[in-house]
Length: 413
Image 1 (spheres, one colour):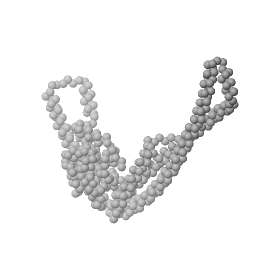
Image 2 (cartoon, rainbow, N blue to C red):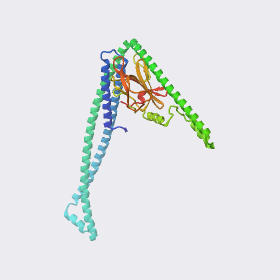
Image 3 (cartoon, rainbow, N blue to C red):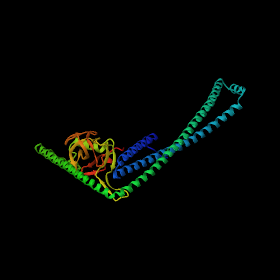
Image 4 (cartoon, helix red, strand yellow):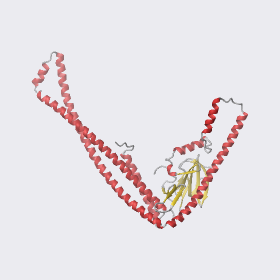
């Protein structure tokens, strides 16, 4: 028997959300493809559309299994109710047969008057009343069981109809999927014909990303060094305070406590309880952080990946996100602005969240300054356009100097 953590209503709700995502991806793809040559951003949208289509089919498979499980349980319940109804009818038939054989008033009166005492006669009268009530209850049980059986049969019929609808929808989605696979293959062929041109475009993009990567690495290194110096200064001040104070007797257990403190890894960036609280908050919100822009479509994912059917290789330090030009770019969590800077003619903002850093690149305007405290969802600037005239930003996440996949930290859309 299958065990499901979601209800059918939740599955249907999720399917509608995914289908809405597909519509948005289709719209974004149409806007990109207008009067433009085949590019990697279009391929990424097609691939994400395919991924979402697979998710719809998986969702329908889950619903189908859930309906099959319900039908299985319905059949078992119908079988149980039919057996129960047969038993009740047999019992009632025996009761009727007995009543028929002893149907005369004389037999009943004789049964009462043959009592050995008055109390015995009262008991016999009570027995006859109880027997009559028992027969009435038998009729009631039969009627209720028949009603329950009828309801369950109707439920089974409805579930079978629902299964038919889901099956039709599943087949429809599979047909669409096959069409989208062909669309992808045709698009890859177009890309292949532009491979050399795209390689030049990618080389220019890689150059910008290397500059951005170097800038972020330098910012993080500078923050770590500043935090280390502060920690050293604080340690010197603490040592000076201890040396001028009254000596304290050191017990044997102190050595153990000291070794434990040394063994525990301390992050210099988390140099105050307040900063540590922000860092832990960022960490605890992994997979649940808001997106930096409201209308977001990822056109290039994180990391190294080979473009199918070509020799083109992408290696991205963050997410390239398409949005509406001029839309607000927002901080994904509370933090402090470490730097506002320029890379290849576009503005960038890096925000520190304890030992975590987020960077927002390709901003047309910036609303914050270095050292400013920002809150989750606060607008820090506006998205600029890319070379094709589409709104676009690059969003980067670091754990200290390590670049990580931002999608692991953002909410599912």
